[in-house]
Amino acid sequence: MAIMAGVAKTPGPGQEPPAHLRVTNLDREHVVEHVKAAYAEGRFDKLEFDDRLERAMTARTHGDLVPIMKELYGPRAMPKPAPLPDSASTPGMAESNERLGGAIAHALPLVGFPILGPLLLLLTGGKTSPYIRQHALEALNFQITVVGASVLLPLTVVGVVLLPFIWVGAVVLSIVGGVSALTEGNFRYPMTIRLVK
Image 1 (spheres, rainbow, N blue to C red):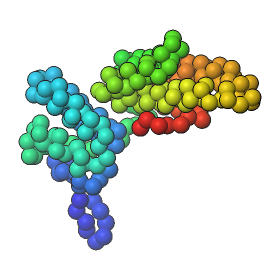
Image 2 (spheres, rainbow, N blue to C red; image 1 turned 90 degrees about the horizontal axis):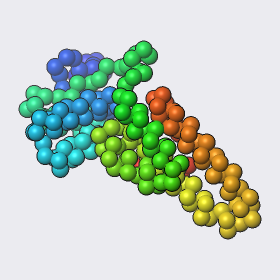
Image 3 (cartoon, helix red, strand yellow; image 1 turned 90 degrees about the vertical axis):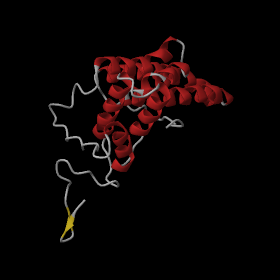
Image 4 (cartoon, helix red, strand yellow; image 1 turned 60 degrees about the horizontal axis):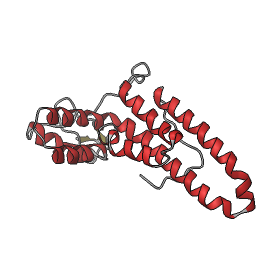
C-alpha cells in the first residue's frame, strides 16, 4: 500500500493488496472458487484440496490468501479484493443447494440426530461452503447447549419444571433456523454456549 503525505492509498487494478489488509467473506469465497476449479481440473489431490480450502476459508488477511493464488497462477497472481455488494446483489449469493444444506443442519436434530446431524453437515458440506458451515456450526452449538441443559437441569427442582419448555423452545428455534437458512438469513440461537468455533 503506497503512503503519500500520511494518507494510505488503496491498491489499483493489477497491484497486489498489502499482506496485512483484512479480507472479507467475498475475498475468501473468490479464492475458494479458484481452489474448487483447480480440484475439478485435477490440479490438486483430495488432501491438497482440503488443505487449500481450509486455509482459504480461515484466512484473515490477504497475506493468507496470496500464497494459495500463487500456487495456482504463479508469482504474479493475487486475490482480487472483492467488490462491495450492493443491496440488490446480496440476495442469491448462497446457491440453492447451500441454502438446503444449511436448513438440513437445523432440521436433523428434529428427527433424532441432535448433535450428530449438524456435525455431519459441518464435516461434509461445511468444508466446501462457508454458508453451510455457518449454519451447521450454529445448529451444533445450540444442540450441545440443549443436551447439556437436559442432563444438568433435572438435578434441580426448578430445572425439572423448565425442561419441557426448553425442549419445545428448541424445536421452535430449530424450525426458525431452518427457515432462516432457506431464505439466506443469518440466524443466531439465543442463550447458546458456542463451544465449537
